[in-house]
Amino acid sequence: MTKGKVYLVGAGPGDEGLITVKGLECIKEAELIVYDNLINVSLLSRAQETAEKIYVGKKEGAHTLPQEEINRLLVEKAKEGKKVVRLKGGDPFIFGRGGEEAETLFEAGIEVEIVPGVTSAIAAPAYAGIPLTHRRVTSTLGFITGHQDPTKGESDVAWEKISTGLGTLVFLMGVRNLPEIVKQLLSYGRSKDTPVAVIRQGTLPGQETVVGTLSSIIEEVEKKKIKPPAVIVVGEVVRFREKLKWFENKPLLGKRIVVTRARAQASKLSRRLRAEGAQVIEFPTIEISPPQDYGDLDDAIRNIGDYQWIIFTSPNGVEYFLKRLRKKGKDLRSLAPCRIGAIGEVTAKTLSDYGINPDFVPREYSSEGIGKEFPEKDLSGQRLLIPRAEEAPQELPRALAGRGAEVKVVTAYRTVKVKSPLSTCLNHDAIDLITFTSSSTVKNLVGMLDKGKLIQLKEKTRVAAIGPVTARTAREEGFEVAIMPEEYTIDALVEAVVDYYKK
Image 1 (cartoon, one colour):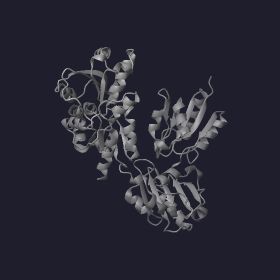
Image 2 (cartoon, helix red, strand yellow):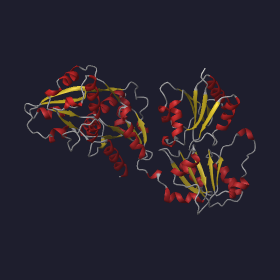
Image 3 (cartoon, helix red, strand yellow):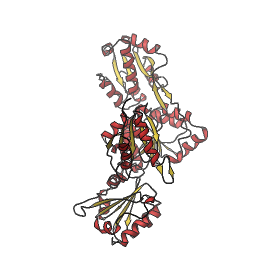
Image 4 (cartoon, helix red, strand yellow):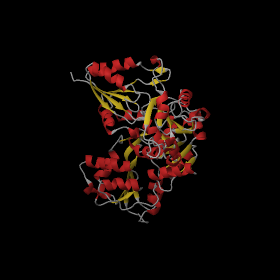
C-alpha cells in the first residue's frame, strides 16, 4: 500500500490570491481535502476532479465535527495511503489548532508537512491600511486570542504585562469579547485614548473597518453591528489608516456582480472585476460545445478556396474553425487565397496567436460595424464564409448580402445551456449587477429562471451588456441596460462598470 501523508496547509485569510504557491500545489495534488469554514471555497475548484472533499468547519454553536473526530479522520485517511490536505483558514499554527492535529498525526506515525499560510492577524490590518509596526511608533507586536478554550478555566493572558508592554496588540476571534478586552486593557493602564480598529471580513469584498478608541470602540462596533469574523487592532499604528487605506477605496468594493459567461471563459472578466473590489458570483448560463453536425463546416473547409473572405465574429469561432481545419488534414496554408476579417481586438488577437494577421478589423466592434465599414462596397460575385455559433444574430449576414455577396454561415460551435439551474441560487436582493457578454447568455439566463424570480430580477437588478447586439437582446427580454461600453471588449466593459459606480 502507498504510504499516506498529511499536509497541514494554511489557506490564507480569505482573498484567494493570498494562498502560497506551495499551498496551491498541495491542493492541486491532493486526493482528499479536509477543509474549514473560513477558507475561500474557490480554492477547492483548483483540486483534481477526482479529489474527495470533506467539510469539517466550525461556527459558533455549530461544529460539524469535534476536534477529536477531525484528528481521527486525518489519521484514518492517511493510513489508507491517501495524500491528504488539511486546509485551514489563515495559518495552521496561529490559533488554528494545527499544533494539536500535527501532534496526533506524529503520534500515529503519519508523515506530516506544514505549509504556513498568511494569517488574518497580518493580512486584515494590511488590507485596512494599518502597518502593525512602524519605526516611528512601535517595534513590538503581540497576537492574542480573543476567544480562549473554555475548558481552561482562568485566562492565561497576562493582561498586566501586555496592556502597556507591547506597542501593537492584535486580537483574533474577539468581537463578542470586546467589552472584556477593553475592560482588561483599561484596568491595567492602557490609555482610554488608544486607537482601536475592528476589521470584519478582512481581505474579502465585504471588508468593513470601524475605528475608535478604547473609550468609544464598543459603541462604534454596536452602532455598525459588526459581527464575526473580525480582527481587532489596538495601538497607535491605527492612526496610519487614514493615510494608507487602499483596499476599501476600490470602486467596486462590496458590489456583488454576476458573471454569466461560460465557465472556461469567465476567468478574465471575473479577475478584472475582483481586482476592482467586486464580489464575483460566477453563474455560467452557457457552455461552449462542438457542433452536433459537422456537415456544413466540413463542406466549407473542403472548398475553402472558393471563398474570397472568411469573417470571424468571436475567439470561439477562430478556435473551433481552426481545430476542425487541422482535423480535416489541412493547415493555415489552405487559407492563403482568402482575406480574413475579425470583429474586435480579442478575435483579432486570437487569430494573431495562430499566426494570422486579419486584413480587416472594424473600428466598431460589432456585426453592424463590420457590415458598415467593410472595405469593399460592392461584393457582387464574391463568396464570404462566416464560421460562428449555431444561433447568432443575423445583422452581419444580411448587411453583407445587401452588398451583393453570397454569404455562407456555418456552425463552428454551439452555446448550450448549462445543466444546473440557477432558480434556487440567484437572489435579486443579493446582487447588484448582472453582466452579459453575448445574446446567448441573456436568453439562457431567462430560460433558466422561473417567471416570478425573473420578474423580480428585472425590476431590481442593473445590467451591463458588452455591446449593442447583446444590449438589444437584454432589452427585448425586459432588462434595463444601465451600462454598455463604447468599445465592445471585456476590458472596456469593466472600465464602464467602474465608471458607473464611481458616479
